[in-house]
Image 1 (spheres, rainbow, N blue to C red):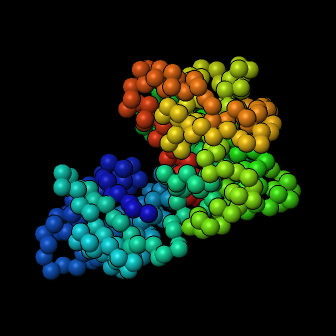
Image 2: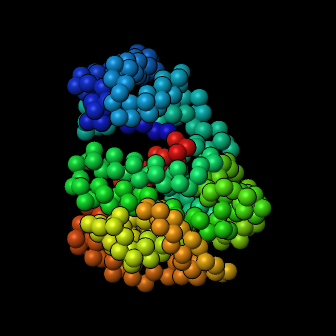
Length: 337
């Protein structure tokens, strides 16, 4: 995946000399002399990987090492505007910052899309593909990663707690039996035989025909959104006044869950379930909440809630909180957790 080399981030994992190392590499790349850009990039990545190796216990050092090692394995790099091909990566320099650059890996071969949770791909809930992962495991992983990100940003404890709770509940709507059938490639018997609901299917995200067929076999319409069901379940759960959510902003919890794929700003797609059923969701405190899927996509309180949250947190503040949960979800999906 595209990787930004930014000292402000990397110094958290390596050391204070990172900015100087990147700045020197950028200066060499800007010079445009006869030096091969690939040599410069490889030397830079070798230095950063060495720095990570001296601090292996720091949070996410292992993930950073994996990402940088993959970039290091790319043989060819170019700083030209049209330098990116299937064999060669592209270097993008930041004109306003001497110690920052972006590395774009070679184009992925046709039909082999990167295994990254999709943003902006709404067809049949494409972000629920990648590899088989249970709903309980994914929910716990996103809850923890959301809290970690929020803590790293220095957000106050109430917002860290709210993001942790929203992360735990964000996908509970995937318990819908037809959604589970879709995650089993349209095989209803397989879905019914699962010991626990899935969050991810294991289908190839690049196989648009296969996932469309799975959705059709399961009866899950292209506009139906699992987060609409999750938001309904969270709303019903909050009505029980759970201890687990005490101190959390109820409107913020519902919004973060509803908006974690970019919708609900302020409206979810108006796509109710054509064949409504009772859906039982497991909430962060393990309470079982049953909702009716007939109500999905008809959240008329959404605009007022969105307006109130924008006034309270500010438009940029609310967008930041949404981004924390979305990035946590994407990271865990990419990692298979």
